[in-house]
Length: 329
Image (cartoon, rainbow, N blue to C red; front, side, top):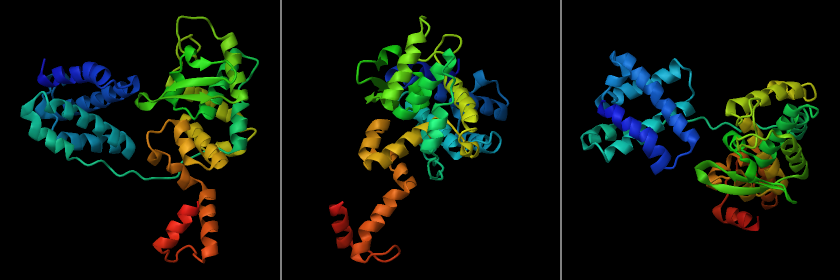
């Protein structure tokens, strides 16, 4: 076994899940990143993957790999940065165990991340959301399950990993009903549920098969619902809902769009970005500011506050006037 094989196996099997306590999804993503990198490096160097050395994974190979996944695999900059982050994490791990690669690690860490276009978040209107929630057939077991999943995904603003990872014991059906979510970075939060969402959840639990799997939502094989399984369900019901809300045909409906929709509706209802951050489980407000950029009412309120002071868009705004405006808000 080469040094690369030995240390990479320890990194993926011991360091990430046990020392770093990374989630299953993070471990899987890192493992897939190295599957792609090792396959690419072996092909480029004409070696069997098991014969690759740490020295083979140098900066030129990594840069060629990043170019390959963008141009050949047609990955976006965000995916490219995720692959590079996995490689850098591995070399940080090596620094403390293989001193001979310190210079190589320093060069790898110097590879810059690619800038990502900060577009506006995509979200659904109330009419579109309601059409989507009403799409599942309540007369079938799968329809009752799908309706509960869609309601919880939207009302809770859940990531798809949070949704499929919810356990049966994390739902508290006592009034008022709530759900205990273990989110990104092992941050936990308890969300109260709307009455309609709680009713949809109780309807599913009442007919949920009694099997050994402790996951709240099960697929047709009575096992935990997968991410791809929910994505398929969402796409199917989005197509059906388009008959009621035709504008859905022009939008890409993903699980994260439901999360964005929840955040946008909550921001418009509360006008409090801090409440949105707490609801979504964001670590910092910086992650939540994307919704302020997409919400036109926030800009209109600022313009209304500037108007009495004779300050118009595009004109110079003295710092003391800005402080007065912000203090009044």
